[in-house]
Image (cartoon, rainbow, N blue to C red; front, top):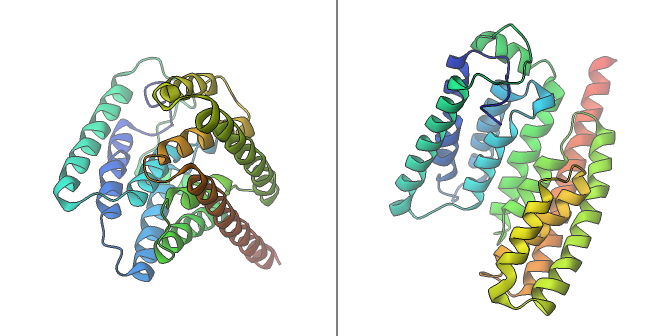
Length: 273
């Protein structure tokens, strides 16, 4: 993604933006003893990601940074291993920056290269979207901490992925997420629980993952993601618990995304009036 796409910003801005990777790892290590205080920290960092990367929306520029933050926050590591994680994130951000800066074959977006101030102005051009995404992600993370969710990512990733600029898109993706998760659970149970012996499960997962690279439809990608996530969770939970947690996380994430979308829709209508 980074070497091939011209995001319309200067190399200096892109390199600085990539520091969001290690910064997300640092923030995710904050202790969970004060979840309501963490809500504001998570919201501030999510908003920081968005004001630097929300545009160009067509490239979903913010997704790699958001995904990194969500995964790190959902899986904090022991303090003895935290430094290793941060070092890896720093190395990763440096490699991405070098690849992007040195690449000569980027897809053209614009001849103009925006500086930091200009990129921020471009990203905040849709403040309601920024508000929706910030609230959805930070609420989902905080709720996962409060209820001691065994797989916090299954809540936060749903809330993030269902948050769209338009409410109709949120409703459409919610329907597809439910259908995709249901089919994913069925495939997971039939093949990875009942039919395929555990030693050969990895071959099935890799095959399905390879096929997913050629899928465009969100519903189909959700099927693959559900299969892979529940299979990975088998090292922690029995299959029945994994399936139940998947649906519980899905339900909570949907509720958060829908409630936030409706609330922001009312705010937007009030502003227009």
